[in-house]
Image 1 (cartoon, rainbow, N blue to C red):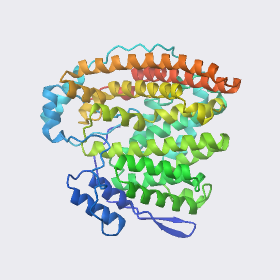
Image 2 (image 1 turned 30 degrees about the vertical axis):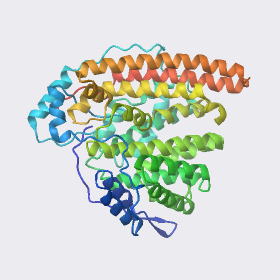
Image 3 (image 1 turned 90 degrees about the vertical axis):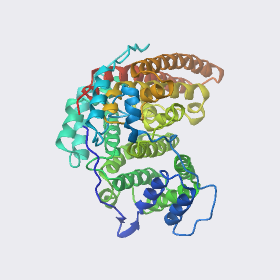
Image 4 (image 1 turned 30 degrees about the horizontal axis):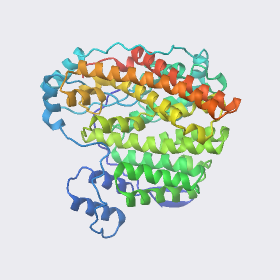
Length: 481
């Protein structure tokens, strides 16, 4: 699965929509990303002036937009292999990643040895594991969908690895064990799409930064095209982009382009399908099916979460390429978004054919349950993917960051992360009690109580199912570079 970094000089400037040519201007985002790697405020202002096509006024608003706290230490040999005891990194989201070109073979060997010395601590989820009995039947249908959407642009080796050898569908079977067969194929397909997106987001032989910008824009347009005039979607995307890049005017300009394309494209039109990236096209299919089954309130909620997480995932890839080393506190907040666990929890409403109003969904105990679950799942992924990520020389991993901040070994850092996971599981259990009390106090309907029970069950199964998948999947085996 690992691929060497490679730059493809392919810049997609225009999209042809219903006979019209719409400027995509991918370099605008590229220039802004370049800006994030500059320490000069003057160069920031200059870059934004190129983006806007006008003179930039000297303003303190052109801040250095840091997604994660920056500290470039890769050039120093991962801090001399973090005092001779560092490890690899293949994927800091759902377990997929890439290998950076490394000219220092001694450093590579040190990382390999540190990876081999790494021991995954014992973790026993307090929730029982269960597998969906309809897994194999649903996966047959999902595989046909995957072949149709991904086989043409994925290498035969990568396609075979993901869908046949690593058995990514098993994680769907473990985290959605109660999903009815009639909708379970959707869960497998959505999970597969997340893995493919994550894989492609990491700069590889087949994906230049320009192509990733194009895919990012395409996906955001797909989401917006369903409700092009919805102000809440527009405001949410502005917030997502401005929060991540630290520049409100750029965010507004980016969103205006997304809205302009969304209003000129027909979500179901054949012309649209032909001129977006394969990953965006696959998401288009999932998105249309989802919103056709669910109320608009749920669709907007899911769409806003996807707007945020897709953009965060894309920018995390950019950070990895530039060896950005975040602080632990900053990383934890960003990991919640780039991990895609949040939308994977929300789709359980679709799978179970239930609906929870926003007023209840955004209640404090519900949010506490969701974010505690997300933390446990993402942190355990960091532990299991750490050996490969260390070998790849990536630093965006909680084990590495805690080791760095605490000045301890990787094995000790992994034990600290595991203790944090145990605490979060306890928080999940407390939130569950609070949720049930919330149901009584607010006199929720039987239907609403059932939806909450499904959420509680889904969160529990995500912890136990993800744990089982990580401990058994070939994806997380330590391999030599």
